[in-house]
Length: 265
Image 1: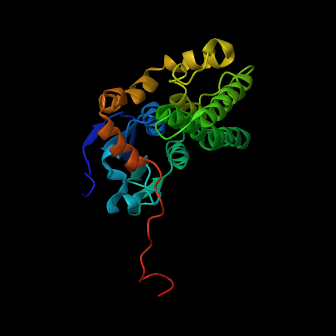
Image 2: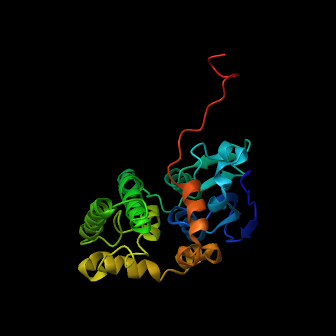
């Protein structure tokens, strides 16, 4: 059965910056990084909902935008070079692109920009993947065999990563210094589930201050709310439906490349 492709669009008018971004999105932590940034930057954007539980990310049209078959991705309908629409995939690359285009939240000086870049890369390489792996093993429980080692491994690693943030925020208001940046926006969505992640937030008091400050930002709240009605409660699903989603999202293997028409032809 072919995947169901959902191209349901919603346009968000944020007003002051006159550019239109198509955001291919589903309400996951990685997707919310970009809705937060778009809201904070006051950029007009259209959400193209990509229903990952129905396989929309595997369509040929989406593959042209995101070769990794993962959302989020963006299409800038009005790139600064005046050319055709420009697509960007990978959430961190999208954030850097939007920061450069809007001139906001990416750092102003050479040193600020590299502080931002380092912590954005930290999020992409450490916080996001390890939090995701912890969630994966927690959801599996013992349905695929004994998961105790995997869960213990990523429980400990996630605790370590909260410690990294806590120490960083000991004498800094934000992750990259005194200014709120895309580094903070990237990390925040992955921390809202701290309780379900088995984290005692009071153990990390400097992180807690940062988290509470960001949680009060109106634009961040708007970004977090985009598509919130689409979030699925897996506890309400049948075993059959859960297995269908698991087979779609987990344990994928390589997509075959075309046999003809390429450089080897």
